[in-house]
Image 1 (tube, rainbow, N blue to C red):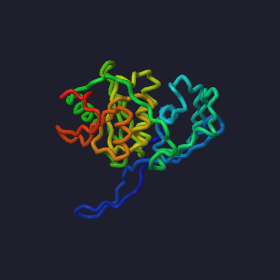
Image 2: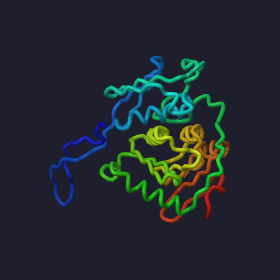
Image 3: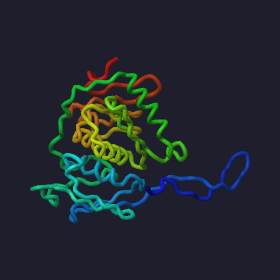
Image 4: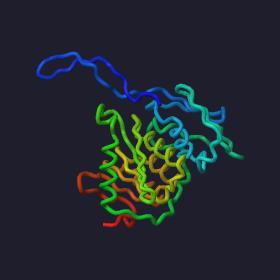
Amino acid sequence: MAEMFKKVNATRVDNGISQVEEKIVNDEQIKIIINETVTRSFSISPNSLKEFAVGYLLGEGLAVSADNITEIKVEDYTINVTVDLADFDIRKELIVGSDCFGGWRTKIDYINEVDSDYTISKEDIFEGFKKLKEEAHVWQKTGGTHIAGLVNKDTNEFIGIEDVSRHVAVDKVIGASALKKIDFSRSFLVYSGRMPADMLIKVARVGIPILTSNAAPTSSGYSVAQKAGITLAGFVRGERFNLYTHPYRILI
């Protein structure tokens, strides 16, 4: 796995001035090439690239499951992916840019609706964020990453991955969970950072019913969650949080 840190020399100003070797978070330019046709570029952490490729394709709607992805080759910072697209014309249909570019995904006419009666307790949310903080090793050393985690109580699994991009952290967690065949409809996401529309669109595409964050949603994210049937629990701080959409999945 590529190194998440780089070491640099720094001048530390404290009670005096000293020269120190310090760790900073590593971000690199990563390319993903899909079916030798479409290339997308990202500035992300260079770890868990196979998981990123799977999660990105699922979030873009280019794969229904990890089984649709027939080959993934990672060479340095380039990912070559072969996807079984059947009659899908990738040149015409892949019209949205990388989440790293920011903003609303363009020309989205259809938002998937999440059909799940899965419920969790408020204690599950607090426990998920406690685990998320424990797993944020790079953030603790640098403050330079976001982290996402998928919680599945049925299998007692927690999959947490950090990245400099909040969107890619979610991509990587989705990909890692898909490769392990975890049931998204009976899982929930814990996540550091705001919740905009493009985040909610990818969560809806894979069918995760609950997204929780230590921040509030944006207005576009709120609108997508309402339409998609996703429960948003935001502003998780200490022993409190706000329920913004579809609160029936959280047992108070």
